[in-house]
Image 1 (cartoon, rainbow, N blue to C red):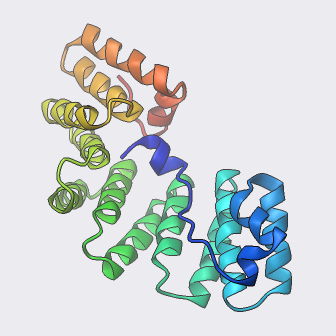
Image 2 (image 1 turned 90 degrees about the vertical axis):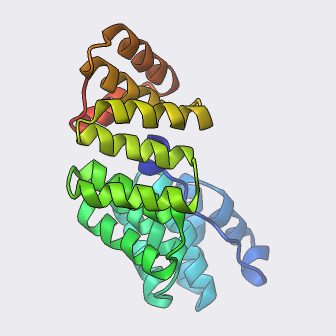
Length: 235
């Protein structure tokens, strides 16, 4: 799973119908970003009821998330879940917001909840795998989750990327190189796989090859080294 997707995912949006979808506030709420979207969604929440409030809370959470106001996104998604406890999109995206806040325990709880509701969701298993790796704990569970995700969606680049992260945590550098290489075969633009493969190569003694991969990662994401340094992963 790419770092961009994991740390700054756009919230899934299903457009409402009827009066909400036709109003100008609803259009700004659903499609805009930043203060404009937040204000438009807040107008709907203040004036609406039922489904209108649920959709507006969801869309305001999207706007908060994109503005990196993760706590506010969590609050709105929690309200959506009060209105509809089995809303998978709200639960998954709240997990992503918790992950962005480095609140790994609550992120894991939400991704586990998604798996309970959708036990064949490869994405949910992948996200739980990545979260275990980010937390650097329960790595056997992480590996099991990534392998389950790959059994549901074979050769998925993001899942191979996540399993590469687990291998890095386990210091299984040859396996990490293999998984990141497979991920890049599916998506050559994955900055995280370039970076982790570079780290694994350096740790394995291939400094020149590792540096080349790390340079390729930085060309795609200038912040990639700091992102992984925050996880404690360095060449």
